[in-house]
Image (tube, rainbow, N blue to C red; front, side, top):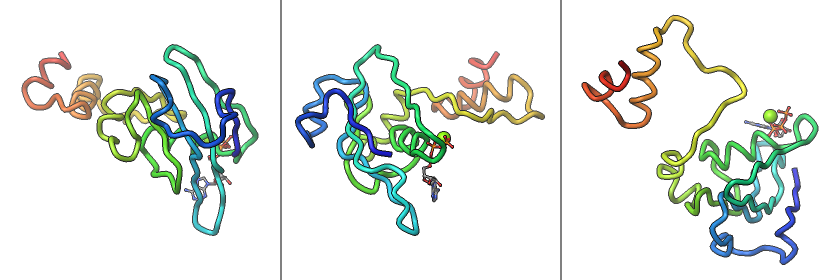
Length: 136
Ligand SMILES: Nc1ncnc2c1ncn2[C@@H]1O[C@H](COP(=O)(O)OP(=O)(O)OP(=O)(O)O)[C@@H](O)[C@H]1O
Ligand SMILES: [Mg+2]
């Protein structure tokens, strides 16, 4: 996928120039084994409060882009920030700051509601007795 946002007319700018954007990507690229260029040098800026959607044909690179922005997949090159944090350098803090609703439901059908809440607490570092209390 190649993508030009309304803010990329200056060419490759440093992400530091994003000026408080919720999401900023500069020359973001992901190549897979076999030389598949899933995402080719994307520049985009999403302002705080802005709703932004990717539209494109199957295989265009939408999911690959979102996975990089969510820190689930390292970029091959380029850079991106979410809430001003670098998705590679500050991945753990990015994960603390975002919420992701996946395309597929990731719930275990045999877990109880309380167990699911305790699992979510654990993922956010709320463990032990505190986690059990919050899940009540
Ligand atoms: N883990 C992977 N290994 C190799 N190639 C991959 C991998 N993930 C994605 N690709 C390839 O990268 C390209 C972009 O895939 P991606 O899933 O990002 O597209 P998409 O726009 O989300 O498609 P869809 O609309 O079908 O969800 C495709 O050619 C895909 O086959
Ligand atoms: Mg997809």
